[in-house]
Length: 407
Image 1 (cartoon, rainbow, N blue to C red):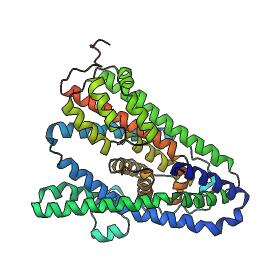
Image 2: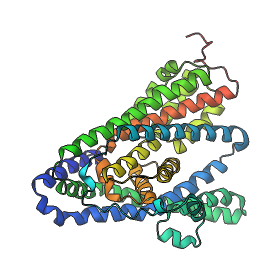
Image 3: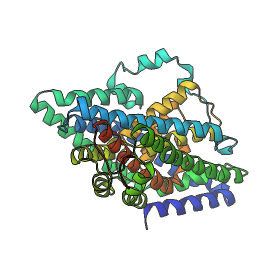
Image 4: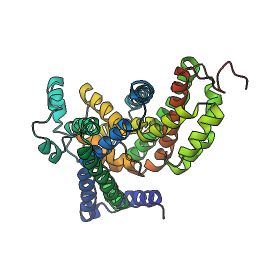
């Protein structure tokens, strides 16, 4: 049985047993605690190795980062920022977690970020002790150290570079193997978490309503990002037909949606951009694989919405500073997201850790992650194709989807 079906069944069983047999919650809640501990354990190694590996790969790709590379990276970051802001606006307006009784029995205090000034947060980006920051899951210093390591490893001597690159690649592979093992156990953990959530909730109808609104919020955000923002950028910024481009990329989008994998759709994406849109091979072969690795518009939007939704569910009022941290960390986590199923849940635990929200909140969104995973992957791939077109137009290329071109 597929993992997403196991999680769906675990979600239904946990909800049913939590509603009808709340007395059994203490006997199974420890399973959920173990699952949360496993996710917490993976936060530092996943973000460190994935970010370092991504940066090293970009710097050693052989392309001129001062021209094509920087331009491509800039477009990818810009579209992800637009996605995050769209998600923030929608989740703030719709408030899918408002009034949800999920956090009535959970302590919501102790949010240290809210008590810190901007100056303190900036100062604490640089840890006094690297190893202390790693062992205490101080994620922002870990992200900074990862960026510094990724930027400077390619610049050291050959022997040191080979050794450290091998260590990073080996560490990343080992971390991914352990992550896959934890993800395989996620049905048991999610079953216990959901059972506890429903067992602690007297009225479960608001929980169902909030989950529906959460899915609606994410879906609306992905649709707006795809059909509104990208269409405006392509039409007025690049002078191409957005709907013709969407039609040309139908095959990779359907592949990405059905497999929930950007990598599986990569050959079809390259073919569509090169042969259907007319993007040159040099630009297509650089922008599309790079985008499959770091461009995660849909993932960034979903993680941002999910964290704000969890905060609303637990009755936590996030300050403006915390919301900025959520948006910033969602962007970084999307860039460093690992290419494995449900890796977004691991990255989500990192964002929750940044603002001090309980990791148990992941149980609220894990049950519907599969369908949202399919949708956000399709948006990720569509973002790759749009950026390829944007880069091609800045290089003065003539495309088949130009407004001046004949259909």
